[in-house]
Image (cartoon, rainbow, N blue to C red):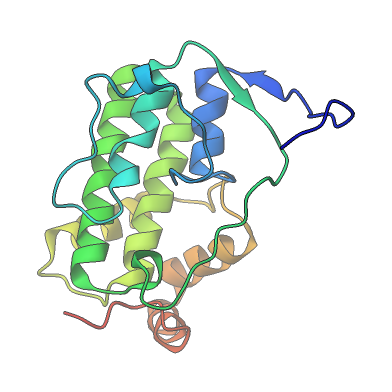
Length: 191
């Protein structure tokens, strides 16, 4: 309960593009760290049968929203426990998240999301898949992601420090890239 003497930061209004940029970065696609009007979910549902279905839904609510307020303040602490979906590594988790990210990529491209941000989104998606999946040239998703990364001539500006390093290793020292991902436990063991 908030008393009259307590105050809340009002937050700042964001455009849809700014909100989508936040979604791809600091706030993530999670449902738990957002408040929604019920009407945003009219004709929007979570895709059945998918793990990480937030990836297939949250961006749609942003595209539908008429007003988006961002509050840069921690009001809730999410506790991740062993055995939770977000700590699970499996082929299904990897394939579902990749498929939903690619659906989002195409939807954002059709909507008119700026090309620069769209390219960074695709490169992040491709690098994530290659980090988590053992090299498998018989997997069309792996080959697609590998080709996306190979076609990029320089380190993407939207990558943070670790992503810059992993991207460079992927491009110029693939054996070391694979070894580091295995050591860090990032590779999907269910192949």
